[in-house]
Every structure is written in C-alpha cells, then in structure tokens.
Image (cartoon, rainbow, N blue to C red; front, top):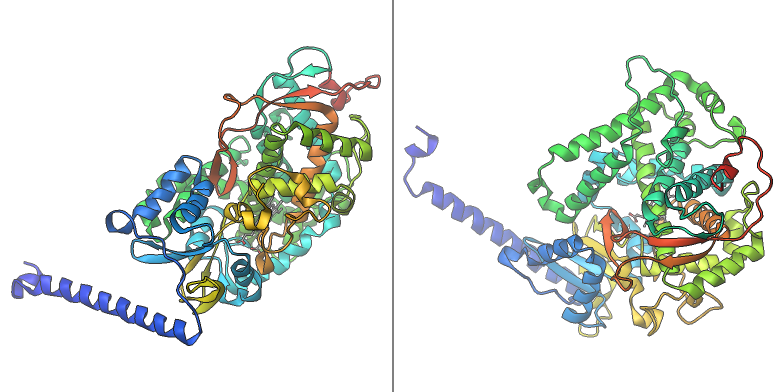
Amino acid sequence: MTFFSFLPFYTLPAIVVLGITVSLHSKWEQRRRNEQEAIRRGCGPAPRMPRKGFLGFGNLLKGLAASRDDRHPQHVVEAFDTELGRDVHTVVVPIVDYELIVSRDPANIQAVFATQSADWDVSEFRADSMRLLFGHGIFTSRGEYWKTSRALIRPQFATDQVNDLDLFERHVQHLLAAIHKHHHAGKSQTGWTRAFDLQPLFYNLALDVMTEMLYGYSVHSQDPSERVELPVLPGFESPDRENIGMHMDAGKAGVETRSALWKYRWLLPSGRFLKHCAAVHKYAEWFVELRLRRGDSYLDDLQTHQAGKATSERFVLLHELAKVNQDPVDLRSQTLNVLSAGRDTTAALLSWVVYYLARHRSVWDKLRAEVLDRFGPYKPDEPVGIEFRMVRDSMPYMTAVINETLRVAPVVPLNERVSLRDTTLPRGGGPKKDQPVFVPAGTQILIPTYALGMRPDIWGDDFQEFKPERWINNHVGRKTGFEFVPFGGGVRQCIGQQLARLKTAYILIRLIQRFDRVYNAEVPADARTRFHHTIENRSGSGVQIKLRYAQWEPKPREPGSRAEEHLT
Ligand code: HEM
C-alpha cells in the first residue's frame, strides 16, 4: 500500500500537470519581467541562435561533436558567420531549458572582465567541476575566498621571483638531451633529426619546471633517471611521480566534459574521474606534509640535490605560502590550482609557436636572426641572461611571434563568467546591434577568444594568415586592448603572464640557437589545424617536425659535463 492508493486515481496526473503549469507560469512571469526590465534600461534584444534538435539539445550536441573532432573554436566562428552574419558579435544561445550568451565583442568583454566586473564571476559549474580535481583555490573560487587567494598568490609571481633562469636552463638541457637521445639521425653534431613529435617533450618540460617551482622537487618526467630519492615520511606513501602527468591529463579531460555539459554534468559517470582526482591530491599532500613537518628547513633538503642558485634565493611556492597559512588542505589546493593554471598552458603555447614556425620558414629565419643578434650562437655552458623586460622591450619579433600565435591558436580558447545580478552588456542589442543587452542574473556568458582573433574588421583581411609583422610598427592590425585577451583581463587576469612569456621566450631562444632549421613533418603536410581541448587547447596532431642542428664548435669536453654529453 502506498500513500497514493488512498487518493482518487487522478491525483498523481493532476499533481504533475499542476507542477508543469506552475513552472511554465513562473518562466513566463520571469520572461515578462525581463522584457520590462530591458525596456526600462534602454536595452534591445540580441540576435538568437535558433533552437535545435530534440528538446533543444541540438546546440549542445553540435558543440560537443565539434570538440570531439578537434574543431570547436572553428565551429563557434562558423556558427556566428554562417548562421547569424559577420556583423553579429553577441548572440543568445538556447540550450534545453536555459540560455547563455556568446560574445566576441571587445566592448562587452571589457565590461565583463573590468568595468562591470562586480556583476560577474566565474560560474559555479566551472568552479565545481574543477574543484574536484584541484580543490578550492585561486582558480576555482569566487567572491571573498578568491580575493584572499589572489592577494596571497599574486605577489609571489613578481618578475624578479620568477626570473629563475638557472631552473629553465637545467630543464632546457634535459629537453635537448631528450631530442638528441630519441631523435638524432646519426652521430654527427650537425644534420637533421628524425621526424618526431615535439609536443609531449614540451609538456614534460613544463611539468618538470612547474613541479620544481611549486614544491621544490621536479618530477623529472623528461628524464626519470634524474629523480632524486625523496626523504622518508612515516605514515605517508611516496608520491607517484611516474604517473602524475597522466592523472592530471585524465582528470582535466573529465573537468572539460563536465564544464561543457554545464548543469547536466551529473549525467556523466564519475568513478574513474574521482580516482584521478584522488591521485592528484595525494601527490600534492606528500609535499605539503613534508613542508609542515620540516618548517623552515624544507629548503635545506633541496640543497643536497640541486645545483645552481643558493637555497635562500630559490623560489618555491609551497614554502612561501606555508609561511602565512599552515592549513594542509589550503596548501594542497592553492598549489594544485597554480599547477593546473601554469603547466599545460605554457606547454601548449610553446607547442603552437613551433607548430607555426615549422610552417613559416621566413618567420623562423627572422626570429633566428633576432636571437643570434642578441645572444650569439649556441654554447651549452653559456646560458643566455635575459629578463622579462628585455624580451618585452628589446625582442620585438619574439614578442610578435608569441602574440600572433596566441591570436591564431589561443591556449584558452573559451573563457566564461556568470552574471551575479541583473546587469547589461554595453553592445549587441536592437536592429543595429548597438544598443545595450539586458542580462538576467544567473546567465552564463562565453567569451570565444579564437573567434575574437578571427574578426576581419579588427585584424584586417589577412586575419587568417599567421603574420607576426602585424604586431610591429603600429601595423593596422596591432591590438593590445580587449580585442586580445589570451590571458584574460581585468580583475582576474592571469597572474602568470610574465612568467609564461619569459619561460616561452627563454626556451625558444635556446632551441633556436641550437637548431638552425625546422621542417614540418606532418603527413599530409597540409593537414588541417586541430584544436584539442583539455581545458587548455593543444595541437590535436602534435608538433611533427624535423630539426637541423646548427654548426658550432664544441669546447673540449670536461669530464662529467652533462651539457656536452648529449652531443657525442
Ligand atoms: C601561455 C600561458 C598562459 C595562458 C595563455 C594563461 C591564460 C590564463 C587566462 C585566460 C586566465 C584567466 C581565466 C579567467 O578569466 O577566468 C588565467 C588565469 C590564471 N593564470 Fe594563467 N595562463 C598562462 C600561464 C600561467 C602561468 C605560467 C601561471 C602560474 C604559474 C598562471 C597562473 C594563473 C592563475 C593563478 C590564474 C587565476 C587568476 C585568478 O583567477 O585570479 N597562468 N590564465
């Protein structure tokens, strides 16, 4: 016997019908209120993407299919240009029972990131999905907690702290050794390497640099034989340095799909995803525990296994954060947040730069000329001295190449926010699309960075070409405002931008000194550009290249010198 068996047979259907009626009525009420509010604020309606597919799932499914085919950024441009028109830059997209806004209009982006940023924050759905993997930290939090996190972490990335060239150089040497070991065609110091994919080596390098910068110990994924023995921590299993990269990648793929499904993310099975999350947490917890037990002497251990800078000068984020906050969960989460934000983004940027250099011989030659002019030819035992300001002020072509790469292949191709209260966007509404657009509280806005870089009215008719020159000499296409936001903008702008630019420039300089030619070895050679999302956007076909060693005179080898070893 159930409760309903005591009631007339029509009770249950009546309750269902009543529920649907109440829900439709409240939606209708809401819509009417929004329309009135829009008129009151002088707003006009933005163009709407037609509702598609069964129950309106069409737009979501089309986006997911494009992602699977490594063409989501292009799909967004096509949706704008072919379905709505080239002059439409802000659109309302209905998905099942909610609507979101997509805008490639710099005026709206400026409002969301900067001038009206108090009305917007990262969406709780994005934050929730990421939090399972990285915990509650600067990247995944909102409101006051985010403000406190940013105030704590941002100063740690001041330029002089991140200018750790010794760290970069050691890992560049491992990269060069890996290229040589796996890919050198013969015994000579000149000639071409075999064709190989450089992208995974950049990902290794970035993981190795970031783990050293954050925890003091590199995982040495590039060369596991370099791993030092870790101290024994009673009660704690040693961290799984072998598989941490794999767990992070798999966890990030889970976050990516969850964020794309937004409020329907509960449809996805989570067992495996949670296992990867747990493994990533466990890895960070070990270092946190070591830091908390050792206190100030945490860095002393590092001295025993790292050459280069004196311990006192070494920047280790965990060590610095623990001086002001001893909460183990906070320390784990904040460092993992920075690891997630900083590792793969830099690796993807480096990969895309070489991807385009391999396809543009004249750009490679010009960049190489600038590098040799500033720093001379490659010498293994003479790393170059360089600062962020130097790259910015005296390497215009390097800066142009990096910017142009970020325009045509933005590492974060889709940013987002959600409105915290009823608000407006300055442009995109009404028949001429120049009126403000009303945005009800709780609406998500997507900012398609790639689509922004593919606007001919901003970048010129040659917008599809990879052309670093557009960034030089106030060329008509040169942009530095909200038309170009590869590092976000306003209050939540990337805090690692200078580090990323410096590290990218440093690694490119050393690579370009060491090799004088790069050849695109992708088959077929005209293969389409594949944008593969795993939160960041990496090349879906890798960076298939051959490199040619530059001629140089090696110095007589000193016994035990690592830098020389890989040249014989
Ligand atoms: C090419 C490399 C990089 C790119 C393209 C990039 C891009 C971005 C973007 C677009 C945002 C803003 C996200 C948003 O608006 O919600 C961001 C935030 C952030 N980035 Fe980066 N990033 C890069 C490298 C780094 C590095 C090397 C670090 C640190 C070591 C880092 C740390 C952060 C942090 C902590 C945030 C969160 C800031 C906040 O929410 O207040 N990033 N990054």
